[in-house]
Amino acid sequence: MGKEQAKGAVACGHPETAAAAIAILCEGGNAVDACIGALLTACVTEPILAAPGGGGFLMAYDGAQPHLFDFFCDAPLALPPDGEIDFFEIHADFGETTQSFHIGAGAAATPGFLAGIAAASEKLGRLPLSDLVEPAIAVARKGVTIEPLQARMFEIVEPIITADTDVRRLFAPSGRLLRAGDLFRNEALAEAFQEIGAGRLATLEAAMIEQCATHGGLLETADFRRYEVQERVPLALALGETTLFLNPPPSLGGALSAIALQALVRLTRSDGPARLTALKEMEKARLSGNFDTLLGDRDDEDPASRVVSRGTTHASVVDRAGMAAAATVSNGEGNGRMVPGMGFMLNNMLGEEDLNPKGFHACEAGMRLASMMAPTLALGPEGEITAFGTGGSSRIRTAIFNVAANLFLEHADAGTAVSAPRLHFENGQLDVEAAGERADLARLRDIEPELRAWREHSLYFGGVHVAESDGHGRFSGAGDARRGGVFARA
Image (cartoon, rainbow, N blue to C red; front, side, top):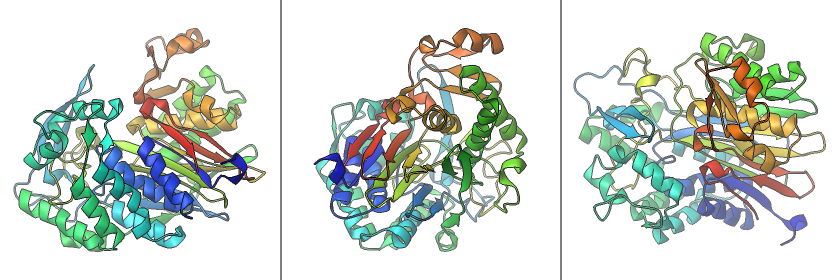
């Protein structure tokens, strides 16, 4: 198929995820449909990062205006807990360091994934959910070959995916963890997708409530009845003739990226030292919670809300009709308990020590948790549209900043913009990716003598997936190799 006749394009974290989006575009679905299909399939191909038990954000452009669907997690209504709950500590091994997490049924916040895809599908989709689940069902049943990146993630979170007999049966069916090259099947998840396609979301919700009731969790029927997908007005930022639409508070990633981009524009250059200055402006805003200059009179929730962003993945889609969708989702690392009969874990958003400085389960009951996730769209003067976003925990904000600067200030092509080494600045520490590739390393070291120089590109710096349309039926983009990225055209 020639580029002129292409139906659209997708960038995401796995070949099977991309194939699902392409199949939906070829069946007549639009960008939102294809993005939803990609998210569902990612629950099979990236099961540590995406699951119906998590939450996220979807930014879409319908040809006239942007829409932001916030379906991130809510704190349970039963906070603080009354009595003992299923909540215990494990340590994840990242090689150079270990990190403490708490899992168990009591680590789960109210998930919004199912409500979010249903809301986006109903408002902006073209095909029914019954069609959108079909590629994910097929992949779950036939199985997917474990990629090296996913195998490494299994090793990192081994204490989580071996904590429970049912979870261990899925991820270590022969008594050892699945390895690169092994086939991963999930028939129970395929059955759950069938329920989603039939519109029986309540079946999955009942199973999640059952898990909590059985194991000592906090989620109850009232949490799901109260939960609402929030449609928010995106932040708009002009970069020359391009307008960026970013995720607004209570998520912080979009606002922080915008603050750094504004600072970089004022500096009138985009080299390493200028980017470091801009990143310091970002960090100052993050630590102070001062977003007044950017947010003006907006009445969004308090941007200083506790931020939760772990175990994230992303998909970007553009189509021939001028629609675009960018979605970032997370399941934390999973709470180590299998939802009975459903083939997935609930999230562990309440179980991360660094995100709970006041103590575990001390957040306000029912509040929407804040996040760093930042799906982003950009509109150009000639009808060009770019969809992009990333996983990467606290590095989400700097990954978006670096790639946006490359795309819209340096005017790099997507592949160059994504692969270029990145800077990250947090808590006074500068991280320089692939330092040997930087001509400005000495100048950066003069400014930050204690900088941490990384020898190679690393998934630590995120995985930005970019899909672009030139407005005339031609598509380009890039999947980020740091996180197994794939780009494909339909």
